[in-house]
Amino acid sequence: GQNIDQPTEMTATEGAIVQINCTYQTSGFNGLFWYQQHAAEAPTFLSYNVLDGLEEKGRFSSFLSRSKGYSYLLLKELQMKDSASYLCAVRDIRYSTLTFGKGTMLLVSP
Amino acid sequence: KAGVTQTPRYLIKTRGQQVTLSCSPISGHRSVSWYQQTPGQGLQFLFEYFSETQRNKGNFPGRFSGRQFSNSRSEMNVSTLELGDSALYLCASSLYGQGETGELFFGEGSRLTVL
Image 1: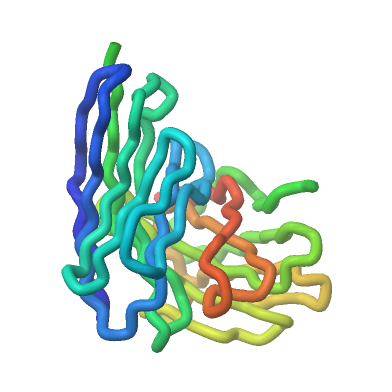
Image 2: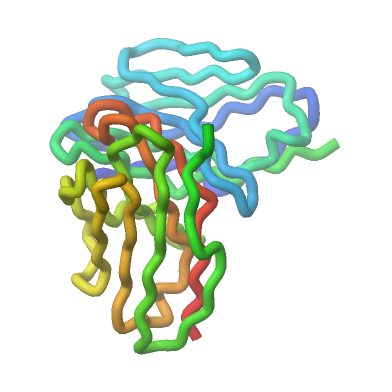
């Protein structure tokens, strides 16, 4: 099976930078995804990494190291609206489905 | 374009009953996946349908079933409900399927409470 670990909760201050880590174990890695889910809302796609390195998209960046089974989501210039759950998901080529971690609840305070 | 629509949004059932949830994917999307979300377990994959065929199935008991119609709309059914089935059931659509592209577009979910 697959094992995906991410911190349960994180807190940060408005305007700061926060890094949310995700580690995974899978033998058929075929892509890592980050989704954002606000309370009582649908998860929405943030980023996708399949090769090692950093993908930047505005205030959000995502990094992948396949050899280490590690990814992080970097959020810059935090805003109150960034308070949400951030879900790391891995696609395994054997199963052709996304397996999600349990999510990291980020609370941004003034 | 319209997003993924799930109905009903909220429902309450009692143990032993059955429930049917509906999902209308984004127009043109042929893949529909279903997930169960609970605070303790997070998002867990139930099944994926593509062009009316079940392509993948998660580790859920046979009480959980689904189907997809020719217009790509999907339904999932849970029979003989148990208290532990209380959860948010999320439907996600994608153009080609999870194996080809990982970008899933989620609906807002159906929140099921089993008493």
